[in-house]
Length: 333
Ligand code: SAM
Image (cartoon, rainbow, N blue to C red):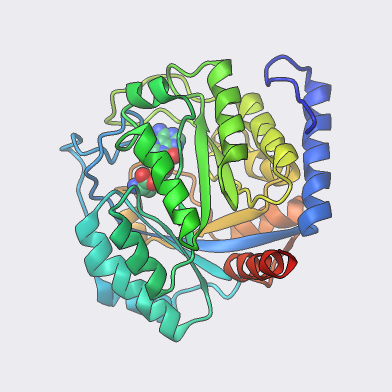
């Protein structure tokens, strides 16, 4: 495996060369194709208390919502852009919302559409993972946030570090494609933590991983802290790609809060998944990860970013790509 210099220790020219190499590797493995997935943020109830996240349970000033099943069915039947091949259903850690809303919605999506179904719902009871898988979801997004055990505890990331790793391994062993990821620039993060996290994300049984920039969250213990450094974030994306040629790596909308062309740069640095936000506008502000004024990637922005990066939109879903990979691996063994 190529050994790469840690971010921060390299010049701007070297950073650009790193991004170009990573983009070229993505092209070799996936072509210049970017998956486009929709996301619906179904509920902002959360039993966790992460220091970086505005949806933490101690944030009593947040208006909590669970979208209505009928409203969601209507959105899915009449409001989805044609360009998406996959749909991600995301919530805070809300087992009631998952059982009552997400699960029936997954069943409906499986019956009525050909969309690949991703979910991002937190660390749950394994039975709930199994029920979601049986209902037709196949791609589970569960971020590590940081790959250092003590740092994980200090930032109050969900549950425990051990349980999060156990969940990733359980999901992968029960037929899910699993995507993880981490946040660059979290308070208390050191260079060594980034290295440790990149190592771990490269060793776990993953189909993909993300690198998100830390944006200081309103109504959180980390309010007022500095946001992530753009160069460190983008070079971490490139390094993740160079170490994991086959990973699906998303471009994250918050990158545009750090640099005007942040999203396009992420695609150029090897990212190959873009997300269109489909949460009803009335609820978006309350899905409070950091700031109420979020940078929302709607269809036009996503199409434009992919075009500016000189890429095209994949017509094959993420879920189908993963299914084909599994068949190929089984045939080869
Ligand atoms: N509850 C689910 C879970 O724990 O996986 C999914 C929802 S969670 C709110 C979605 C993601 O938002 C987290 O995994 C975290 O990486 C990201 N996030 C939250 N606060 C953030 C912040 N201040 N800066 C950057 N990313 C943040």
